[in-house]
Length: 192
Image (cartoon, rainbow, N blue to C red):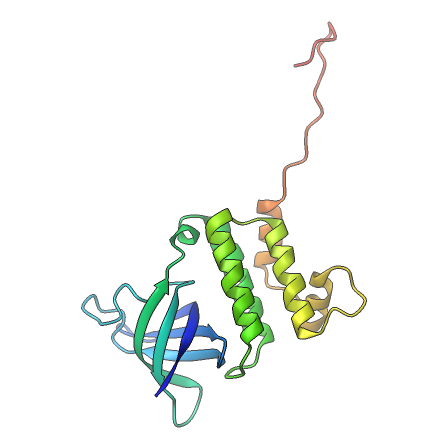
């Protein structure tokens, strides 16, 4: 049995009763677990598996392949405000997708696990902003050693991945302030 602290970054339906649960952990990096029967209302996992939850998890390592068997989950943080805000969900999902694309499975990444936890806590408390998105990208690129001479992390990430996840464009559109419209004057010179 393996045991560690992890952040739930993705849920995928496996069967009518089971989930594939993707975790990002400090000691094991990205791991995928099967939560058998977790979609049943009477499951021991009921209420314990949702996006961006932090939890202590116990799993049995797969003999072959990368799909381990989830045994126990003890939730330590739910970050409920994220689920009530579409922009926060979109930004948090974008960060998780970047990590999935850039990090090897079963490879320890304590600095990046800490970065994700801090970023999710920030968004849960303060909401989604373009500044938060850029900060995460900057820290991720710096930690991975791909910044080079660039001033913008997005360029380094794009070069490394070939393209950035499509949520990024949607986030920029949704989170950027609308340009101010010029104030029109009336014929008398008064402002409308």
